[in-house]
Image (cartoon, rainbow, N blue to C red; front, side, top):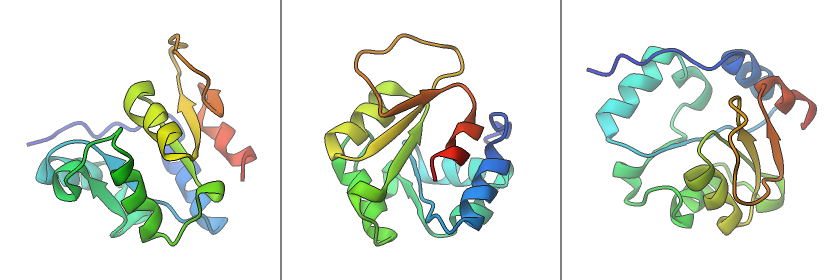
Length: 132
């Protein structure tokens, strides 16, 4: 049974802020359906995303495949120019979003070097509150 339930600092606070600002939130993750849903519930994230959770096993595509990004943006009736992908994995999250054509925020608390330039990069999720 998945036990990882520790969120990165300020994650819940920022998600609640974004939700209250009217942002449509979706969660994209690679992995097995049941394991990921258990993690989402254990972390208390289900209240932010509802049925807008896209798990690679269910969708049939893994990040960085653009099709998983397309499924998510379609679910929220979103527009690419109004969408921001927030991720901590440069290859799957950021490069995938770049290929799909949406802006990205690379959450990089360790200051890891990356090949390429994300739209935004930072080590504190509260930065996102200034972007909406």
